[in-house]
Image 1 (cartoon, rainbow, N blue to C red):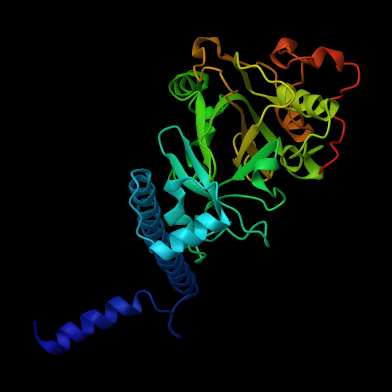
Image 2: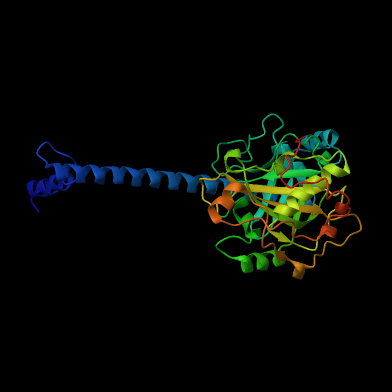
Length: 358
């Protein structure tokens, strides 16, 4: 094709998108709409590529850390001998498998494993609760963030209720799989039961000891007063007496979307996994899904009778949920014997009473 004809074709193509002074009002509007759509498309593409690249980098970091744990478990360290000796002097009870990771980042407090994909280090920054909300293991900016617990738990072994946070990633990473333990999802209750039967326990190893936790409850809850009283499950970390524990457990069990045969008693170590969750009310309600488990007691089997899992037909939700769905709470449905000695406190415990935080 002659060069001048090719140039005219190119100019014609450009003019079909770029507004000109001789365009009709209709053509002008059409071109502006096309340009806006094009800019949105480019912006989304850049965001997706950036997010994909960031997630790939984060995955590589996590894989490196996992490999380090596996190597250290067999006694092989990449940190210098001097560094290892210094760490063992500073933290004499640290497990060998964590020494090399601790050398990389002393904010590590343990390792969490649950279900198909949750297999991550748990971090805690002593100066900033949300430091790892949007930072990776090395403290670099990351949309995925890290799995972390807040700094109110010091020392970590002193917490009766250890709360661990992670993003609910659409890709399924981090706590994206946590809501498999929620029976009220588009997947349905049958899929929840199937998943629970495969994975009824959580593995959480602190720097100092390995631990298995039996899952006993899961709640869907709001965070803002405008939608009803937001029960502060994440703010009660230590129980100074039996009543505080019973009050907490009554509130959790009333709200739980399912029940297991796992019993709980005062003195148990509780672990809470918390993530954002928007079904079924959408993002107009800032809501969370939290999963609760208690540590296997000394001398107790880690086995769980998974066939005794049941879905709660009427968990205690919040005002906005009932307003939109027309449902009503049917009252306490669970077997009180699941919480040892709870029956002594039933007259004192109101599921809607405010909880005094630590």
